[in-house]
Length: 122
Length: 112
Image (cartoon, each protein chain N blue to C red):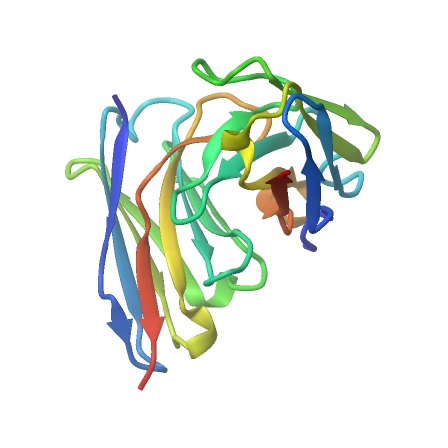
């Protein structure tokens, strides 16, 4: 059974750097085809994809946020970490990590964490 | 990359069939089988309903089906039930952004 859980600060001040950790079980990021993505959702708004990392260290980023994002993986700890620099109140959102189903032609995020609400405020 | 276009809301009565649309471009929705659909109930994480345009993960009801024509994908729910009331999002890879991911703006389904 695949599970994922996001962790990190619930309150961040503007201009700070946000670091979120996704701890997962039930799969390995060493396995061919596997990926883990980050998606966020501002209160009352739509889903927004942020970043995706694959088993082979391939990294993909949202073009609009690419300069502020870094995604890394630690396969020994079964964790994926997302950092976002220069945080702004518009970054207030629930942040989800999700497992991407292997060898699909579409972004098949088949298992999601519960999400963590991050509020940006001074 | 722009978000995929979805109608803001749709409504239907129990037992009816309802179809959601998701319009993109030849660089995303129109590109191969690059469409997934997600269901999200209030306060919950999204759930994968359809991947690769028309495939259902195990455990997803066969009342949900997906299709695509050109740059527009569709999700159909047959035999509408009260529990289907939720937000529905489409998603695709975008070849215009080095195979990044793009989501639609979501459609709110109201079961009357």
